[in-house]
Length: 171
Image (cartoon, rainbow, N blue to C red; front, side):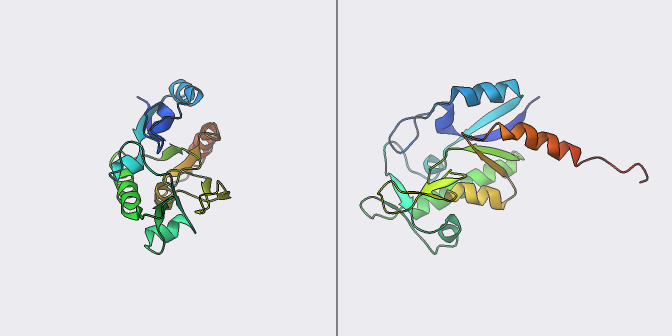
């Protein structure tokens, strides 16, 4: 039996992005199958109550500030949607804990999912290094996060963690 991994549902072909589209990544799906991973599609924004076309959303500062309620996630009109992002992040974390998930492959540049880069909160398409709200919460809870660009590192990550579990023959 394979190992379950969280995957941003849009990367698996579900039309759940803010624009109502997907970002189907056939190479990722092929990689998961080939390496015995079972994808568990999640969309934190939908889990938080945001359905269909919405946003786009951005936030200034860091995801940590959002989780500490010291920042806000807004749409381009300035309306606040922070509660949806928090609810979705905690639902995804609860699922990950229930399923004993250790790895997540998440959509880059998403204010929810991104494990690497986000938009800076100005709605001028300026990208900065940073985590999405859900990605930050998963990482904080020791789940290894990857993007659609670096998921192939999972193979070496899995091998190195297996090497670290050798037992001492004296005990």
